[in-house]
Image (tube, rainbow, N blue to C red; front, side):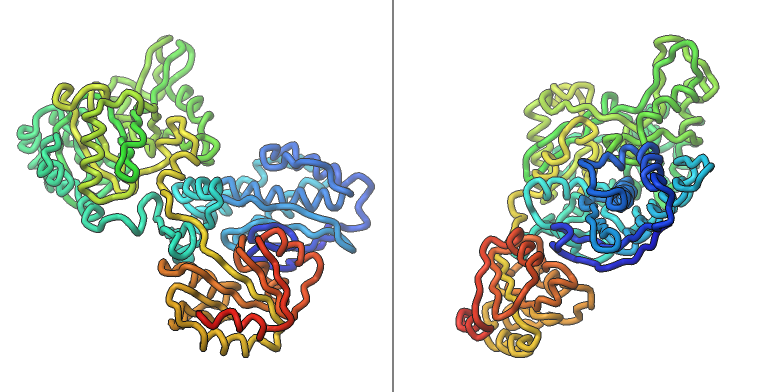
Length: 594
């Protein structure tokens, strides 16, 4: 049906797009019956309308089909964790060129291969092609997306960075560490924790017992607890903390292994067995605190949001079973966390079965009209809970308590778990208790409660992330060796970096061990927090092969080199000021102070 060949991997702005893209050529068979290609595209568009709502017609049906392939691939890439924006196509002699953004080149290649497969299947005459035919390969593909794409918390921060024009780059390739901003204007995050957080606070948070001890040392109300390692110790621990109680693993988060509201010895042992599925370490038996579970989100020392977390529930209609009601609830949620605003599906597992059994119910029970049943004993978002914004109702003393604790922990962003019967009342009057501190609180809870992702992301990023001045110098290949020598001689200022080909330095410090990926030395330099300015020396060939080294630059200096007209246009879009000099020596005169 078509021939497909990869053409280039652009790591920066290029003639196709202003972001990193994988570009390919596609040529469709001239033997296709008239209208066959358009019919195939229409079938694909009807099956995946959420991915293929393209704007504006193409100049011909081949370019339209290429554009469809790119859009389908982008939709597949973004369905699970991706945060990519570039996809398109244009007519070229003998066919069309298409391009798609990437976090990982290999994953985007696989997306394009799946797009080709989908279009080829849609073109087969007499075959009833459906979405289900692509479900298995897509699930395998999305497993790779979960491995190589930014996680959801990083994606949220990227939304805030994009809204503010802050550049993002991986701090450690293939890891969950992402850098927002360049040089002195940068912060590194792993989810919502950053390299400016206090070490001790992070250590305290890792241990629920130590967290409780810190709360107590601060005079902050927190429930009694005991640790147990054997089932034989359970009743004694519960007698000390009081009934009802809560059982939770010591080394887990997100509500995993937690059972609340335990009022009998039998339920206590079942809760211990449930916690044992998640940990082999000590298990905490904690006093049950009546009231609602709240997440207090503190950012840069002030309470930004208060979210009441509620267990998911269903309401009977007198016609459907609990199983059917849960299925209806799950139909409003999906594996695409962005589309479902981070609300998770409810698993039909033993936890659900046991929770229903505690209420004398099974999944086959038909509820009376208006009868409400909760589906979990905990309200964590990760286990299917829902979130309600109650920030405006927070009592001043609750606000002060939250801010004081996070200041003591020395964290830029933290989430405190606080239980109270009335968030609008003072802790001393309501019996409210602080349960846990989280150094990596899920930003998704705030979004699930109705906040715009950009709002919470920009607050967590803070004012620091931004850009430093970058100058691009373009010169002929024959001048590169001399330029490298001159930069080595003139580089003395430790706040100014330089990159020439695969070599680079920060002042007199040479950058070592740079990998061979395009512009790796540039990214290495931009990761230095002492860097205030960067000079990048390149040839026209490097730019045309790899794209520009960064998305925006303060200045470009063309030293006796020639760029094709279309690449001159790329420079004009990405550089504030473009200057021409006769040769490299004319530029050397300006760097004597480096």
